[in-house]
Image (tube, rainbow, N blue to C red; front, side):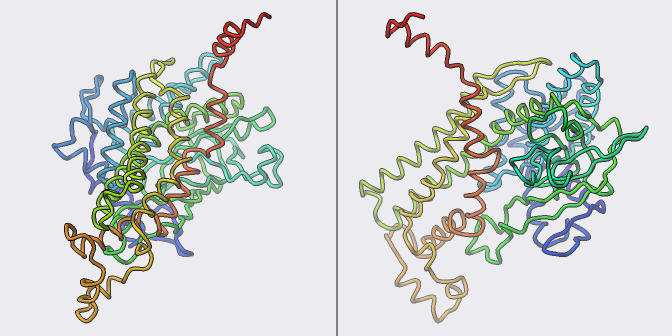
Length: 481
């Protein structure tokens, strides 16, 4: 089995995993009214792979086995592979109405990073991690599994190293070792879609010193492993009205505090054990792939902003106003700059041992920084075009009430080209995207997901080679050493 149906994917989540939501343990995540929405959204990855319109994009034929598999599992070997991956993420996000499914994207980002770092560890230390990563990758591909990556430790006092913390479990660590494997303890936060996947991959969040070697650990476990517990965040939870919330009633992500309460990991699933000098490189390599995923799923949301701004300007009768056109032009420029930088990072990739194409680090981080640093301004432009009825308009109940509907119909109309009902639908879409619990979730996500603004700036400065620029200045200014 190299491809599963959406139904098979959903059924596979009925595995007895330990999940808590709003103070209660969830017995079956597939039937929970809120969590089920996130699962059905995530199932879009599987539905697209079955859709004849997208099958060539979403799948590929494995050259070794001849099996048709999800393209997410295809190791990128060149720019073309990265561009296909970018297009695949775009397509999935558009199908999710601007919300990325993200149940294979992050997991395979981690697998690609593990391949690269495992090869380095094997070459330098004589370890045997590469074969383990390879077998795990094949297992996930052949069973078409969904995966989440748990990277961000809870951290405690961020001014202290992991081994210096008040209690030692602010970072996930190895607490014991047996002949069959290791036992780990600690917690990760911001684990996207952990509640909706089959496998949890765990990697370090930062560079470590020799005193932190017990925290240098990478592994993978099934989501129903004994001792693994998920406390799922309710923020961005499903609202009650499809009329008011046309996106978030059907499409959402869920984050969890992921707890490892003395979890056993068998040796074949351990990909780093104490090699502290490789913890930082693994974290960084994962981010190189993960931020490419991030900038690949941003354009569909930007496209919603552009389209909503155009239609709202028409509905309000202000489309010809110069300041409105200026704001829409800014939204178009914002969208296409992110798209162009994403494609450029694929074209400018570098191929590293063992033959894996890595998106250009500097361009990827510039794209992510550009998106995040301009997101709130983009929201402001869209809200300004829409007007105050985003948050002062009537309720769905008032629209359905035969006594009040005629008044709404009469007084909340705009330009004749768009009906009152459609104008209300535009307000509701823009409110859902920018002025709701879901919209607030996206605003924080823009800043902090896939690394903060400062993380991108640090990476850009660290990775950029300024020496040619300095030498150029010296030549022009006739400065001699």
